[in-house]
Image (tube, rainbow, N blue to C red):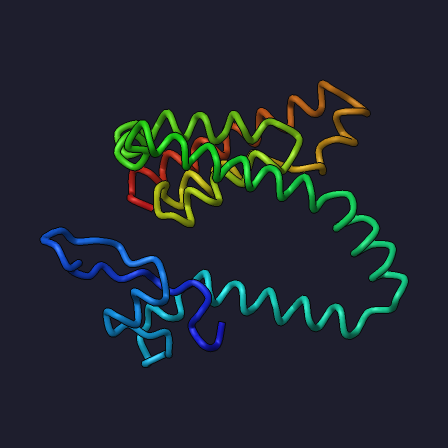
Length: 197
């Protein structure tokens, strides 16, 4: 993170032929005169790099200050053993879907022309009492494909595992809560789209 190796942007440089090509390897970067040292360029520290630095520092603080019981039972036994594979598979699946779709259709163009449909899909997927499907919207937002208003609408509706105890206790209450979340998520998402948020 500090060296700028993580999250650097690829440069577009003229190739030996007449075409312009995207540089993806370090050898080509060096050939083009592009190095990875920070020169005070703002693009070296974007919101993703800053977020990763903050999360890394918080994780380091937690690991160095909590007792072994927390690390073994909660962090390792619950979060990593139970949820890591599921989160990895959802993230990998979302990346795979986006990759293959982008080979057949221009996702950016299609999403730009169907923002209301994407908003409706985002809030409907939020009904699922599982946080995994949410990752596709995080990835699309991180790539700049969807605006923040669609991500926030999906986040308002989805409760992750939090809604499962309510679903087991009372299906009517679960549906009522989800209906309220749907309405609020749609209103905020729609208003956000209208003001370009």
